[in-house]
Image (cartoon, helix red, strand yellow):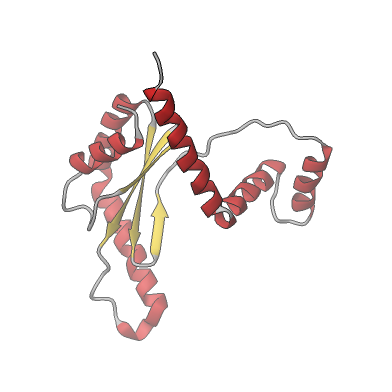
Length: 170
């Protein structure tokens, strides 16, 4: 039981039904499972504050959820970590606001040639990032934001490869 759909199904069945408006979004990689649920928008936020007041109300709703469910979330995470062999992180979305609670920042080692190092050093020198590591993380975030459709196509192709391998000879 390590497939993303199986893990998402387990969380959907395991979590209290009154926590979220819909089934939580479950994202899985080699090290971590991130569970993000949608909370109902606060309905009693004063309207004279406009969008800023609405965002503060949403942030407050997320903070309340985080505090009130901490113990239960930790117990569920312990169960899931034992079952799936991955750390579990939590998040909540409310209206236009979304917050991830404590989640992993996993170090990744890479070897770069001088032209690639020069790109990172330019980002550091320009103040975009403090270190080469931060600059590389910035580049990865940028690719993720601007090439999402292409990355999704790659993921779909990989799923097809996995299916073909599983159906092949033993």
